[in-house]
Image (cartoon, rainbow, N blue to C red; front, side):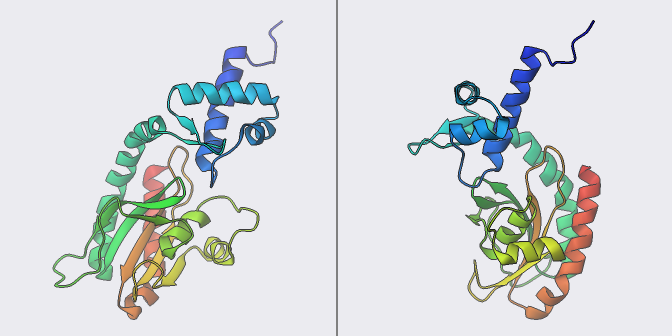
Length: 227
């Protein structure tokens, strides 16, 4: 009679993938004991799983004993980022033209919001913009708030993150660029895709005031393409 228990190899793989997911989605890394608790295994088993992941540079152990994502994971994510960017850029171009402002796609990388693609409005003589690869801390600016809102609720999270999750967008003023308005919409979760958001920046309050519904529709379109 076949056993309902998973094979040892499959169980080990499942634990490794789950441990990697836990470390990748944590805000400041995880200790061996924390991973053991989440996996419901002995500390020694969690330690072996994390050591194996570290051998492949998927995680790294910091001086504080906490495990965080490593360069190997970033290399694996390159293909995911490319797919996400390619799907988003036609939508970003439409948004920039319709709203007359710079729009961007940002993703979570560790504890930062990182711009994966930035599109300026066509024909504009003056725009507020920033470079692809630009980054700032999560929780700061409309994109930083929206990216936290794209993730499951966390104990003690800031009120503006909870509000953004409930209303579907975040709006800020002057938090990243002095005098600039930001509006960002979190992308609904897609398996295998990092937390992401669509973001608009402008010095014009009337553009910011009307941007959220347009960005929310665009985020729904992008989610449908990815899903």
